[in-house]
Length: 218
Ligand code: BG6
Ligand code: MG
Image 1 (cartoon, rainbow, N blue to C red):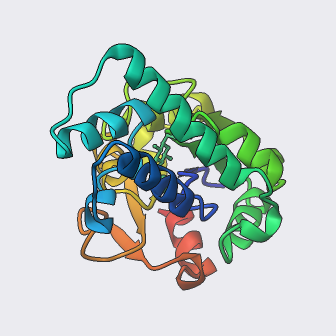
Image 2 (tube, protein in one colour; image 1 turned 180 degrees about the horizontal axis):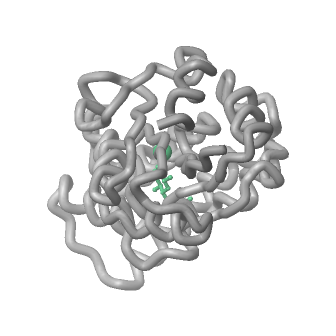
Image 3 (cartoon, protein in one colour; image 1 turned 45 degrees about the vertical axis):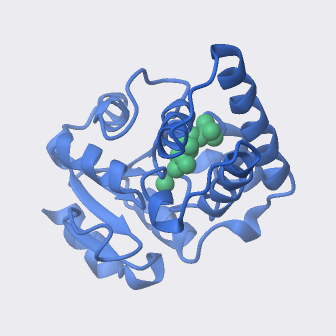
């Protein structure tokens, strides 16, 4: 039997938390007099908390002290935690459990590859933690997406070669990271935004079991 490694991003792929990151960053940016658009927000997706704040400050041409930077990072996360506090399994995106269960039944490697330091608690809240053989998150990597480290670490822990791994991503930075890792990249979201991915689907309801089986057989 073939064993492939399937690596899932979290925010915007498994759960709809990308919207909460956006709301929290937007509120924080407003508080320091910076405005950014939803198009600019695409550049924040998949990107670490530190790098996201650096980008926002750069857009607003703001320079702040190290202490202010730290306190803004704390504010953003506190606000974000407020949004995810009451999350439960109803926030899992459609057909994600179906695909996860199929992969598990068919003995494929299943990993999480997320930039978020909140990934573990979120997976617990939505009751999906036990589905993953391996968790790689923002606490376990030094270089964020678009660097391939998060996915290469996932492949290593799964003990599956990078070329036999498939990544699901909603972020441009994440698709770049998967491509740099020499993995098959599957974009979840807008075709134009994610044009660098090998395949793009609007969401998991568009991904058939036949397609997953074809990826396994390759
Ligand atoms: C990524 C999100 O998954 O995690 C980004 O797409 C976020 O928007 C990043 O900034 C870091 O998340 P956290 O939870 O550690 O602030
Ligand atoms: Mg994401």
